[in-house]
Length: 178
Image (cartoon, rainbow, N blue to C red; front, top):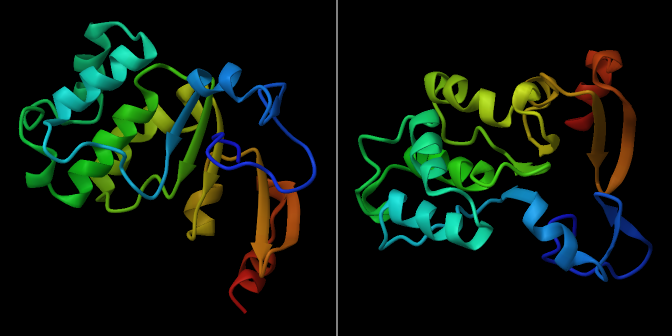
């Protein structure tokens, strides 16, 4: 719903101060979305994918090379996505999500399939220092809380905690998995 991909059945949703779904058009270009699917065309190269998305978002063409370099994919940028490992595809998907320098990043398991070196490489783009407001979902509560301001714990569709991330007790995290 926050990415404007689904309509709410009830209640009210506001993103970047705008009500959804009515003002979805006004916020879509201000959101960077990294979902479970990479949202990359497999027959195109990483560079071709990013050029396509840059045109959609009216991002400067030079930004493509900048994000490819930032995620460590310059050397493989011209290979078809279908020939890349899952970790390389994840890095390209992160590059796609941040290409247009969005105000809001919606990140679902952003470090999935990344080794520690790749995770460290993408951290400046999607971490606390990125300059964007971030909503991160993670099955790794310890890693997911790193760099977070506020944390929400969910279990069986119920809120188990909502607090500043630095105030979450280890027991509260353990209860998510009990």
